[in-house]
Length: 351
Image (cartoon, rainbow, N blue to C red; front, top):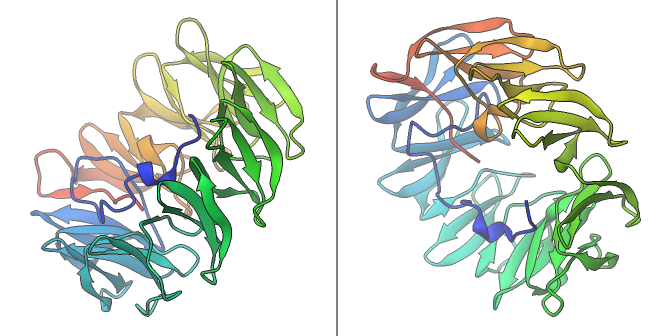
């Protein structure tokens, strides 16, 4: 992944509309369901808590979920009550008690009561992460804090959200990437052709096609000739010449051999894997199966079911039926819900 501007992400598709896309799982104890062309929410007991009546929904965050009717959007609470009127042209999920909404052709921020914040609008803006949000002005990117103050003037060609106190930026003149802190100070010089977010105290960078990992002082802690991804929980995916997936540790040692058609990053001590016969399970950091590969597909908090939800669950598909299991493979809801030709699809939208 190269460093890209957040504006390239589908922040304002507003809400979920296509029941066949893979997205989130439980959020704040509820999961969205698609029944006869409308979205609602079900609890972990399989009970319909919010009747399906919306054209689209987001996951719950900060006690609120975005909902859409007739291409207008607002927010409900976990009791299904409309807390913020359905009137916006686009919305994003709440993050750090602030949500981004689209009004006409402007981006604005609101609080959990629906009050506009900061007394200003933006050409483009992103959700808050670590108390900072990306915005653009005249095709250049900068940052505001959660008080609405411009902390970093818009001057970068591209930029990322903050992670572990740092954000990646691409210099407009050199077209190279570096990292700034929350005061806007360039703490790692723009030396890299590509850069990823900091995770586990390091960031994956590329210099003229050569992959390496740097710490927050900008020092290389690992250089590798492998086709490796960023680290997550101390492990990074890589592929061999046969395009099979395995994992290395932070010393560059191959700790889980390449034997999977696909693998997701580690999250909560688990990594999704597709076997060579395209069955899906989860392995632990020793490469042992925590969830046996007996399923056909996962839906989860990250795209393609990479990680379990914050509540520790994941949707599974077996014999064309949807169910829910926990991170140890225990069945929470059996695979009895028909997601292909019946009237109930268990899915949740992106945030």
